[in-house]
Image 1 (cartoon, rainbow, N blue to C red):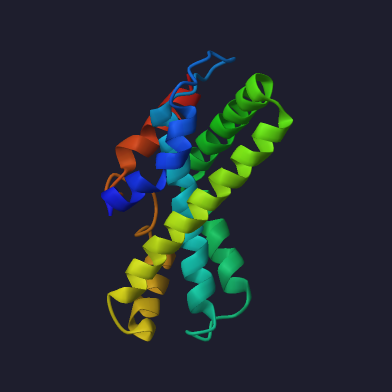
Image 2: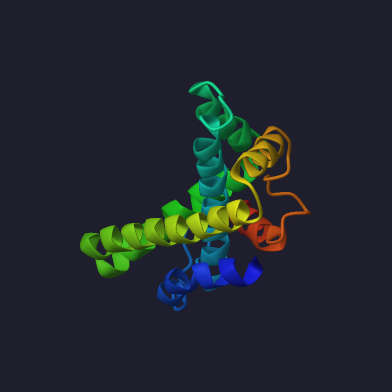
Length: 167
């Protein structure tokens, strides 16, 4: 899984590889941009699993939104770090390259998150019967299984973004 996720951020990291300008509190870097992308992908995975499984498991329409809100609450420090870093990164891109390049980079970021998050979800469903996998997903979504915790394979990377944005 790590190889897939590392490859997922390749395009985005290449762009930011040479961005090291100091801003108010946060310095941008390739490794922090990677962490930013990892957190975004995990949120995408959570939302996509909830969307894919809610009708399959006969869950109410509110299931997706409630699942996302619960995940955001449990992972607030990572979402806060993502938001702060993204504001810094996007401001830096705009001031260095202009608004047009910023808009292109926002689209590229979205495309990377969607493509790689979708690949992770497809891998999850490829492990077995969709109903059985949706049951596992629902259990995991209701617990901390999909949260960014020390058990998360890329926890250290995600935590580095929290530390960098809280200085």
